[in-house]
Amino acid sequence: MEAKVDACNVGIMGTSLSGLDAAMAVAIQHGSFIEDDKQHVVFHRDNASEKLNITLMSRTGILPEADFYCPIPYEPLHIVTDQALNAEIQKGEEAFGSGI
Image 1 (cartoon, rainbow, N blue to C red):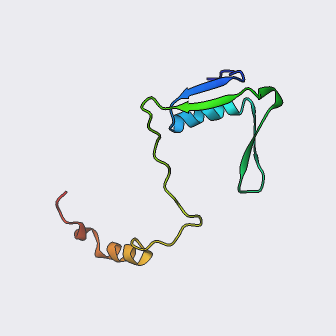
Image 2: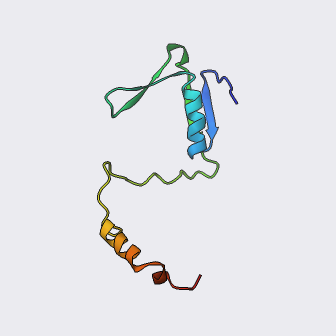
Image 3: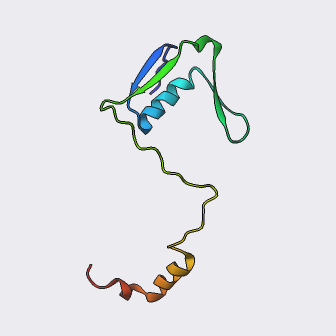
C-alpha cells in the first residue's frame, strides 16, 4: 500500500515498531537520511516539506521499553562458554532425563 502524505502535522497512533515504520514511510517522502560519518545518520528535510511534523502517540500513554544495551563488538560469554557447552554435549542425551 502506498499513500502520499502532504507536509503537515502528522499524528501516528502507535509508538512501537509499526508506528516507527509508519513514521519512516512518511519521512522518506519528504527528505533523505544521510550517513555522515559511518556512525551517525542525519535526516535532511526537503525545502518544500518544512511544515512536516510527525508525532507518535500512545493510546495508553505508555511508551515501549527501550532496547537493551548490547555492546558491539559482542563481549565474550561468561556462562555458556564453548567449554561449558561442549561439556554438556559430551554428557549425551541421557543427561536430560526421561521426563519428556
